[in-house]
Image (cartoon, rainbow, N blue to C red):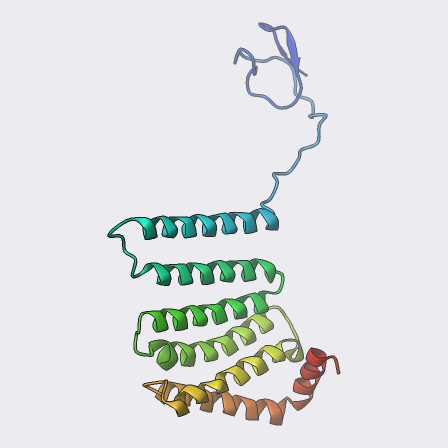
Length: 219
């Protein structure tokens, strides 16, 4: 046990100097009788509270700017909508953090929604429909495949994500036919690729597809 001659105290544990006078110690150290308590990790509840507090602060600041004469009132609705979607995006990721494929999928879908809202509010000319959606759906499929293979999952365990992405991607036909998509070529190419993938799944992986659908609908 360490001993400080100046303070006349015995010291337990590993110390380089006396904690009272900072003087030199004599003797040999002995193990600490108290167990080492690991540092507390940030909990899920704390993270969600921090995110919610940041969102509330952001909305309060926007409300204050709305009351200031001559403030940037034109962009405040856009900022409020974007901030709300980012908060929802964060909360969804925290909730589904245990399922990385589902979490990333929801993140991308919410990102697509944010782009659509920004495009609509800013009257951007349909860039989200023309380019963002056609680019994101193939990315969703690629992400599901890479994460599924990376986690060592069987195809039927993540095939439902592929089927959902393909189904939703085909909904792009609505803005193409109604003229809401001013530049439909990327959307048409995207849907064609998804249909090719669907044909491959049905022809080569029909059993896996059926198993995934049965699992999804509890059949």
